[in-house]
Picture (cartoon, rainbow, N blue to C red):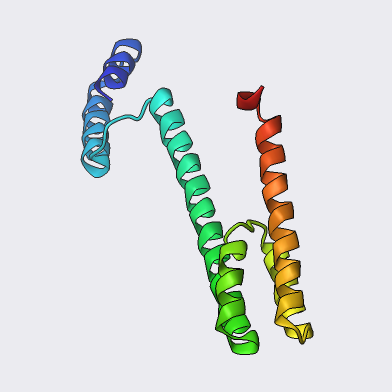
Length: 144
């Protein structure tokens, strides 16, 4: 702020009465703001930091949502088909990362009458999810 003030003072000559008004206005701005100038590089850094924070927050939110969905499916499976099916399903459900797949399994759980049939569906989708994850890793630049 002082550099800008010095530049304006050097470039512009004011009549004496306006000089005092200008000086008071600058002092009022400095007191009101009580903050230093943020450079372009700092603004870019702040923006990037905020973007990273938003991404991390969204990832955490998605993971919490998936955990909640998995827990609900396990509770429903326990209630519908018993402890054995629910425990076997928990390991498989942990492999599934797509909310749509978990939703599909929830509908199958409500529609089906046989816990073993539902477990077979869970296993098939979990294996497919694992295959998709491995395929994504195989296509990543780090794998090449």
